[in-house]
Length: 125
Image 1 (tube, rainbow, N blue to C red):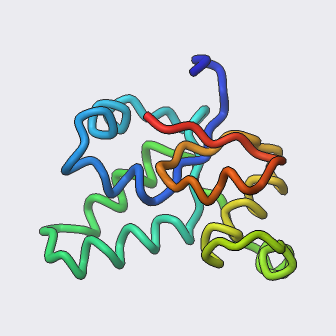
Image 2 (image 1 turned 30 degrees about the vertical axis):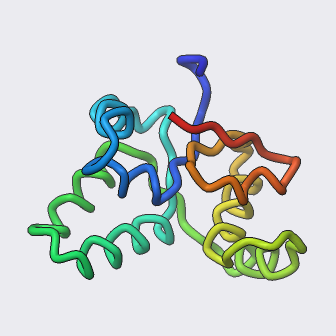
């Protein structure tokens, strides 16, 4: 991965920090000038971690917000996500719409469903 590449970080990367050394190491190097995510992704992370009973999820989300650029989701993003014909979950389609609107073509994710969209490039760790 090129050091200058702007990346959109998917929820599964944030959630893998407890199980995956590569994710944990990567998350320690987050840079808000290169690492982007969305309010929807952080909402997913919050939901999953709360259900798992992780302590102080609010503090963790605040830390992630400080270490990344958090992009807003617009009505147009939702509209474009709903129109996207690929067979993936709606939150993933919203991520693609947010990426397109912000000129980001690389997503860091373990979810191979993103490979269906040929306008973006998915990379894992």
